[in-house]
Length: 105
Image 1 (cartoon, rainbow, N blue to C red):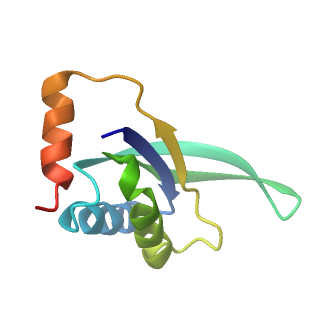
Image 2 (image 1 turned 90 degrees about the vertical axis):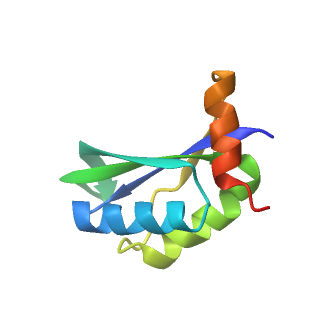
């Protein structure tokens, strides 16, 4: 199996926790970290700043579409950030735990 880290920002901690819990409960990810970040971005031709919560979602690449749909269904943003980064390497025990955690059988 190949693995990815999916990144998505949320407007507040309550939304981030709701999404993280749903993703893990559905076995779409082994773990979701939530980190506070300050974002500077362009929105409708204006430069905006906002404190946000960053979801760091560890999962299998085969689950990207399901993770993406879960985020879209729960997200308050019109265009949520959903970016996948390939996990090039990882410790064998961690990757085994990840696989076992998202296994469906």
